[in-house]
Every structure is written in structure tokens, then in C-alpha cells.
Image 1: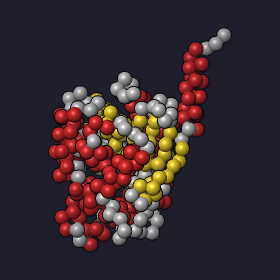
Image 2 (image 1 turned 120 degrees about the horizontal axis):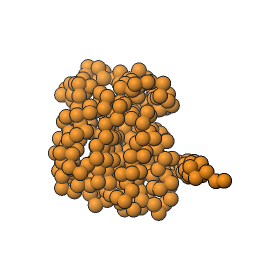
Image 3 (image 1 turned 180 degrees about the vertical axis):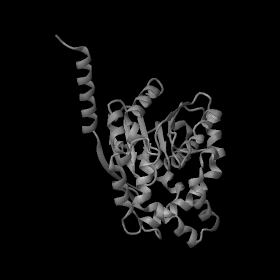
Image 4 (image 1 turned 180 degrees about the horizontal axis):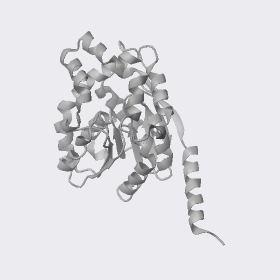
Length: 306
């Protein structure tokens, strides 16, 4: 006699296996740079663009892509200087959020993504909000995971970085170089997690391997300096949320010390219909709550895109 629950579980496992098998690892030339991206799911399905943070790459979405690709066309690029994308010399390429947004925007156009849902995390927030405010009609929905757009989300972690913004001098630059070390990278993944055994070392060791390439640490310090350009744009991003009211899902590791939990609730101030979930974890919430996040995303997007 057929067991319906077992049949359902087998069907779900088959779908997940098919989604993993469908992931394509591609590179396109955008503005003279080789941009690597992960591409999964049916080409005609509703699109979901996943934007990574520091010091990670599209690798941080390795499991989420498989969880969603049965239903969505999932695209996850690496910015220049991150992951498998090109790492041009600092003298030949300006590592700025404006340039990252321009390249990602051109990638979506090259792939024919006329409209897409947007998942933004950490650095992905300033990249994604630049895309959203430039072409709001292209954003079908917004998923924010520890991605800041409010002054309330900037905690004490940023004080040494603000000192660097104020002077742009070598002593302040060197004072934050430790943020490119394996100690700092591991801390980003494990701080605020109730049981660090839940965090796979694959994420932080992969990130560190790319950051240990000659010259990459200085690229990262350049990007830290450019982050100062994001805060003056917060009012513009908030106006976008108020005026356009995109369907918005906010997922936040409540124990994050980089972008603190106080940065989550203000999304509802500008978009009262935003759905907000605080998770008992830290900055890289996907590492410990990936299955829960995938379920929340599937429930949220159902009926909103496509």
C-alpha cells in the first residue's frame, strides 16, 4: 500500500536533486570584466537575483539555490574582486558600489531578466537598492537578509571604519586590515550562533582563500572606504520603499553585531506591509537557518511573482 507521506517526501527529494543538477556555472564579459555567476532553474520561470555580501561570493547561496531552483530561475553573481569573477588591479578598476551595481544591472540585461525578485544581504543591499531605485519597475519583490538601509542598523562594529572614512589616511586604513584575516572571517560566520558546530567551515575557508590572493586585501579596504557613499543614499532607498511598496520580506539574524537587529523593524515604517522575521542567529543566517529561510521565501513569493 502506498504511503502518501513517503511518496511526497520522495517527490520533494527528487525535485531537490533535479534542482542541484540544474545549476550552471557561467561567466559573461561585462564592461571588460569576466563576471562569474550561478544560474539555476527553468529559463522561463520567475527570476530571483541573489546578491552576496562581504567577504563572500555566490558560494554563500550554494544551498539556497538548490532549494529554490525547482520553481524559480535563480541567478547569483560574484562582484569583481570576489569569488570566481575577475580581480582587476586597483589602478585599472574602481571598486565601488556604483560600479558593482552597474555591472550586475548589465548582467541582468544580458540574461534577459526584464523583471526579477531581489535577495539582498550585507553588501548586496547597497548594490540591490541602487538597481531598485534606478529601475523600480523591474523589481517584482524584495527579500532583505541582514541588509541595511537605516541608520538604526549601524552598530559599534562600524566605529573604526567610520574613523577611516573621516581621514582616508593610512593609520586608520591599517587599523581595519584585520577585517581581512581568517580570524575576522570566521567571527563573521560564527558570532551570534548558539552552536558553532552548526556552521560549516566551507563558507569562511572559501571566502578567505579568495581574500588571501595577492592584492585582494587592499581591494577590500578600498570597498570599506567606498561604503561611506551608501549612508547618504538611505533616504532615497527609504523613499523607494514608501512610494513603490514592493512586496518585502525581511529576514534578520537578531544577534548580528555588524548590522544590528534594530535595522530590521524600520522597513515596516516605510512599507507597513513588509513581513519581518528575526532569527536566533548571527550575520550569515543562511549557514544555520537555511531550510527555514528557504521555506519563508517560497511562502512569501508564492502568488507575488510569476
